[in-house]
Amino acid sequence: MAWTHAAIGAALGSQTESKEGAFGAGVVSHGIADLVPHRDYDMKIELPLLAVMLGFIALRYGVSSNQFYGAVGGFSPDIENGLEVLGFLPGTIYPTHTRKSWFVGHGHKVKSIVPQLLLIALCIWIADKKKP
Picture 1 (cartoon, one colour):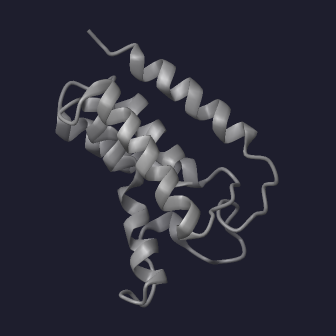
Picture 2 (cartoon, one colour; picture 1 turned 60 degrees about the horizontal axis):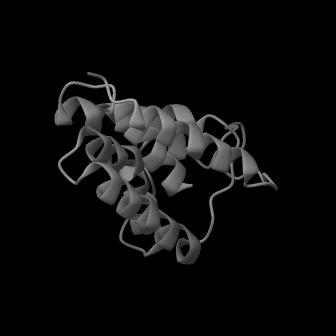
């Protein structure tokens, strides 16, 4: 889910030395996180959760923080999913957004949201430990 990607990006961004590095770490982390089986929800659920997470990160760390830049990088590959759903793109190009049956990440019906909530809590804890 996009809010989990944002939390992971914030955690990694907190450990970088530049906003560009934070954004890049977030983008790369998206692909790694997509390798873990998970369930994406309808945009009616995803977008409000993402907005809450970004608002939380902005309030906690600031919009010019590495955490915020990492968060934006973390969810940014999912923008193409939204554009595809809305009919603006014929398909996706980000490597882990494949719909192929062999891919273990997307489409698996993970029943519990608890692992993602625990991961988000861990990521916020890490983001609070900003690299000096």
